[in-house]
Image (tube, rainbow, N blue to C red; front, side, top):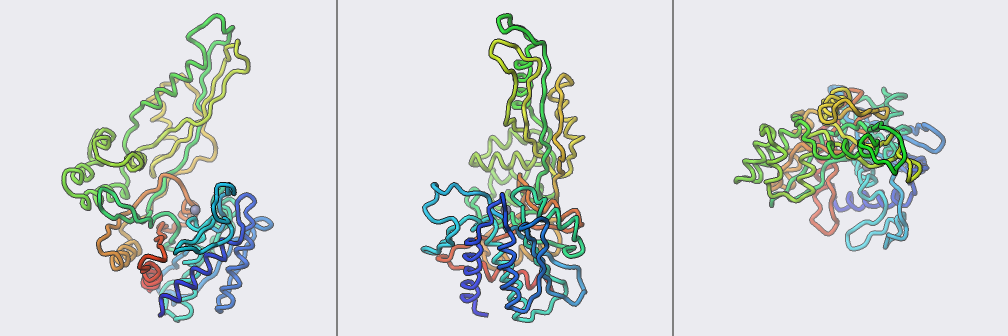
Length: 425
Ligand SMILES: [Zn+2]
């Protein structure tokens, strides 16, 4: 295997995919599906394109194993978020390669993973790697807008095409340095969402006669309570292992504090005392707690009239294992009963995949082969991906896509290709 050729070929696929404009909306992912189908066909791999709506393409291809184990799904999304053209130095749809960097919308989310997963399929096929499991490739529409035309639709309409024991998805894989140690996360958890309207009702009247039953003031008091509240901690397996692993990696007193975090009754305060950058501190807090963030306000129609109702829209994220109902109790504990709380449908629950499974262990082993100094930890993102749709089929989904740079010693393609081939045996 000549890895330089593999790299160059994969880079070519990535650049081609970037040139196909799949900004969602409208998506138009069908053009990327057709591209992938052509490459697969040239390599003797059949694929199907399933349209959830005109131009909203989803592609599925499968390499067959001998059936000793259940399938492995390589999943990815083909749509990208919009661009502000005047903020780009390069053409966002040019796929330019310059000084070892590839420029374009989707280069990191997630056409790079599409190119890698495509390439893995091609190498498995060309090298006739004997497989115990089927390896399924699913490239979806619409992840950036909730997956309704993509992974969610595939799960609902074509579950038998994509049913698998394990899936590898976007999410983890960014190498980061935390307190001097190089850490890679394999994403095993994602938070859920429970957005809601917080509504205060009060006495209407003329603004010239102030009164404490003003709905605007009442809402402000409620928001202030939410902002200052200490919500209970929820410890998942992923975060227990993450904080313990991070603590072991870091060592010293900071390491001890991290290791003890999940058993600390006052974890929020312990976090404040740790020497972490603000982003990391906030992320660790969010991994351990349900969070509430008010983002929109509405009340009144005239400056001299006290309105009878005032509303805030609140974005809330739930730790896996917490339902909207149990979260409502937490909100009631903070707010009491005088506010209306109306959840926006649908709410979603967080998800967690076993951070001790054989596939997880294989991923760790291979990453350490290529970067022995690094620490590999299960990780939880505080947002969401298509994983939440696929896990409803019982699939354990792991987010991992190691990014690499061409002017560094690029061993990642070996890590990915070798890791996946091994994982399927
Ligand atoms: Zn993405």
